[in-house]
Length: 251
Ligand SMILES: [Zn+2]
Image (tube, rainbow, N blue to C red; front, top):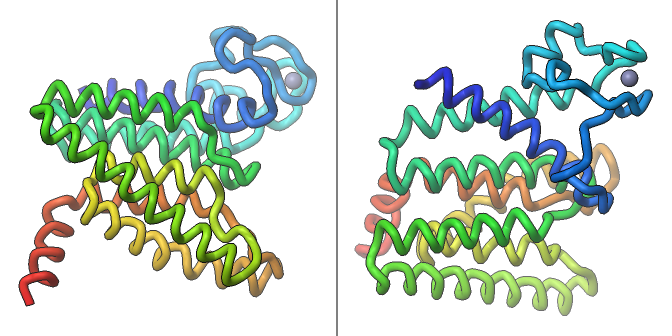
């Protein structure tokens, strides 16, 4: 079962890379056949087996022998590993399915935000819809509505930060995608833990922001991967963060 979950993850991973790389360029992702990035040769099914094709072809295109981007290999392994981790962490049920959605979002956002500084709408809309469906299956209506309200609450917090940032620094400190993603974070974690994830993301992003400013002299960097990463960390350590909050707010 664990091996199967890893393989399914790797297959999804190769699709997520396509979504993250082609969708921002306006290319079709569902119905176009996969092609070699160098020679444009249409790839056959045996060229498209995640991880294995890359190893067997020694990282080269079977037609033009140019190197295939190594990111194919890493994204497939990363997605497979996150799916496997989710399976080992949670019994099959609500947490397991939401864990798979968070892992998928993390990979897609990682690819598109680092490559193009963009968080795509469609993965956010699909994730949000799936989570609301899962909530209403596993929980009662009241819990689902509280989660949706938490999502809206966190969305408004990020909007406020966005306008404050604009007012103080005369520039956009957050992207529209970051604000929309915060709705998903609130929807999954509810308001208090969602806010914790937002705060955590600023700490996680800080070293990268400093390095980016020092080395690349660039003060613009993708924030989405840090938000999605913090969502991942808090969701997988839900109990510990809940205990931490209880501890902090008892005084
Ligand atoms: Zn080729």
